Length: 173
Image 1 (tube, helix red, strand yellow):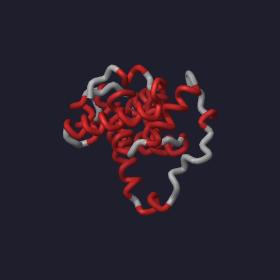
Image 2 (tube, one colour):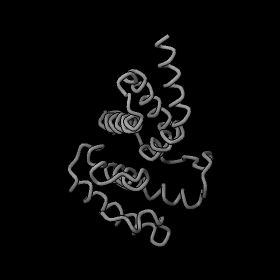
Image 3 (cartoon, helix red, strand yellow):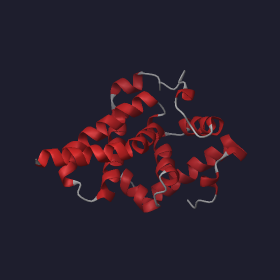
């Protein structure tokens, strides 16, 4: 019976957080197919660790950490360096969005950022984590988070100008 309760709790979590986790994975990969793969990797590892994840607040953090680590591992593999980024020809219209024009501009600008800057922007501004939380998630110093955030926002402002969403305008580095 214990496994049945565990499976039910895990299934409930997945049903509630699937969209959020998928969107987070997409912000890392810029590809819905790769985002699905990344999310499945995280959910598989989460299922194994589920008995240890008693605190509901720790579950999302664990899933984000697994996705970040898996994404970093994928980028370190030799096959990834030889392939194109996969961003050419992506049909972003296939995924429903609130405002496709604004989102596609922002996603293109995010795609142009170096991977670590993109991760910092996503964690700081999309998930609204503090500098300290972002540093913990990425296992880097808070000063490094601030520097990446500063350079990323400078690049985003240069490429988007007035199109830069409000969420990044009033945020302190």
